[in-house]
Amino acid sequence: MLRELTFACAAILLTGCTTLSGSGPSDQRIVSSASANLTTPDRGSGLKYALVDLNSQVISQIPDYNVGSLNASLGMRVGAPGTVIIGVGDAVDVTVFESSDGGLFIPTGNTTDCHCVKMPTQLVASSGVISIPYADGDVQAAGLTVPQLEKTIAQKLSKRAIEPQVIAAVTRKSASEITVLGDVNTPQKLVINDTGDRVLDAIARSGGVKAPPYEEFVSVTRRGRKATVYFNQLVKNPKENIYLVAGDTIFVDNQKRKFTAFGSTGVTGQFDFGAESITLDGAVGMAGGLLDSRADPRQVFLYRDEDRSVLLRQGVDMQRFPPTQKTIPTVYRANFTDPASFFFARQFPMRNGDVIYISNAGGVELTKFLNLLGLGVTVSQNSVNTARNTNLLMNGK
Image (cartoon, rainbow, N blue to C red; front, side):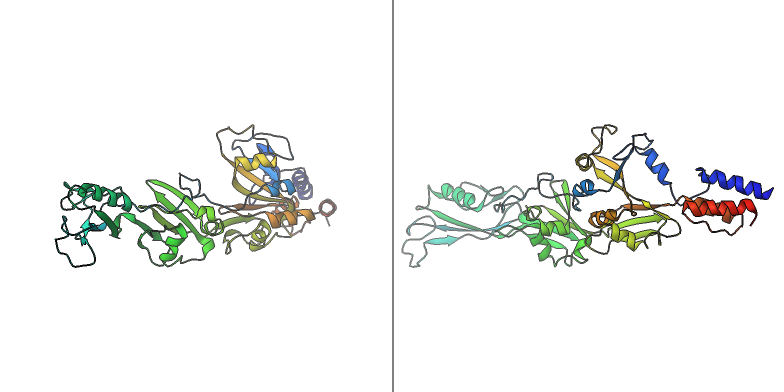
């Protein structure tokens, strides 16, 4: 009786029974639930996602790893060095020259070579003005460039001084400060140089980043708006190294990029990239590779959120996804029994937060059932060996 019952249960398993627990969803479940794919008909799913098999067309459309952009993001374009604008809190020196003595500031009989007078250093008040004697009241300084301030003062003194000429200089630029915070060696406030400072200039003046560059992300906040870029992208692409303006805040954030692997892998868990970039084959290797006794090498899955435009270029039908949905849950599938798949895996870049799942082979479920009965029979994943073991059970051997 036990022999007949054993054979009946084994036969049920061989015909596709999936009632035994597994380490994750079966490949049949993943394939049948995909909302869009390149290889199988659309069958619909509660959670709509795309299933994409790795091939040369797909690989060619996978963009290089990138997070955000300073260039063209939130109006933070590269631009040009900013003109020094006088602001509240700045210290300004003003020197007035007259063409001859006997004028407003130069007494008659002046024996010095310079027909000039230097005013006391002025701090731009909260109202934005400085005080210049005989200039018909306070002079508006905040919001002007240095040449504009010089011209304004000269015009106000022209009725009293003899052909006045003015030279002004900003000796303390409190209004031209930026702030550098986060994972740098010397967080501080910096004054923008007259020639202009870019993001990397400010980071360098703050002692550089603490952690390996491939773990760093840089954010710039400007007038309440924020944009973020990967540090190495900032270094490689000059367009991302934008000029700074007064009031900008730079924050360097250390983020170790990680991926998760589970299923029929040698080691399951979360893994640090440990490098600037890794590819799918390297990630599978870090997770201990595929277990020979369990894994189905045809069903290696990678889960990520992919940009809609990328999937469109790959040829995925996007009709099942709302037009406003810019990011699509995507499952990429690699078949490691195909030699070409290894080359594709070597070209497939991993991203932070990716999940790798390796499905069990079909014969694993029968092995679980036989072990549950305590028969101690090891069943090969090969269908011929599975059938031979089933015959042994029927004959009582």
